[in-house]
Image (tube, rainbow, N blue to C red; front, side, top):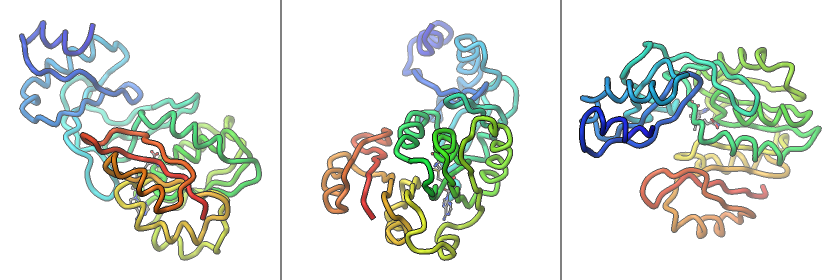
Length: 259
Ligand SMILES: C[S@@+](CC[C@H](N)C(=O)[O-])C[C@H]1O[C@@H](n2cnc3c(N)ncnc32)[C@H](O)[C@@H]1O
């Protein structure tokens, strides 16, 4: 049964939410209309009856702050935010209230990993708990430096390197810090590939990426859909692709550039 049909049965006709995402055994539903919180118990019951493996249901009311983490309100089930989330055979222990995670990026992580070759050195700036680095290190014998300012992202990255060590051909080097400062300690043109996934601000850091990258820069930006081509031309990108919807007529776009 679909979520909106379940809610219609329980509560009658209404503008009920249709979708939710699942991270491990936790469901997260984006509730932009806070009035829907009044029906939180019913929403949680419906989700747990549709998806039997879900043990906790949380509403995400916004993504906030420098760490880009979700502001969450408990709707039902266990009052727990830590879980084990699987992506392409790898297991990631994480806390959805402390680190950024978006299951809609799973294919993007895997797609980008295929661009990296054995022997290369990668910089995964704004790495979160390091999804790009894990996919890359699973595919190839590389060294990937993963930089994030959120100490919880680094704590879980270290645990997850241990958890997935049998699957990794390459090495992941976690670095906690502000990228604008950490980057000062890297030599020019040290990295074959630089990935920057901080869509609201990545463009501010492009000059640093150009200094550090030898072969390729992969950058994510939030932009109005009708401006993406123009930006791509201005930056001399060889590829441009929308990877996430963000708001009406606005998305997270990936651009691939030569340094
Ligand atoms: C969009 S999220 C990470 C996405 C991650 N690459 C993924 O694919 O799941 C952006 C990350 O940038 C980190 N961040 C924000 N400002 C930063 C800075 N100045 N230096 C380093 N990391 C930063 C946040 O803590 C957050 O984990």
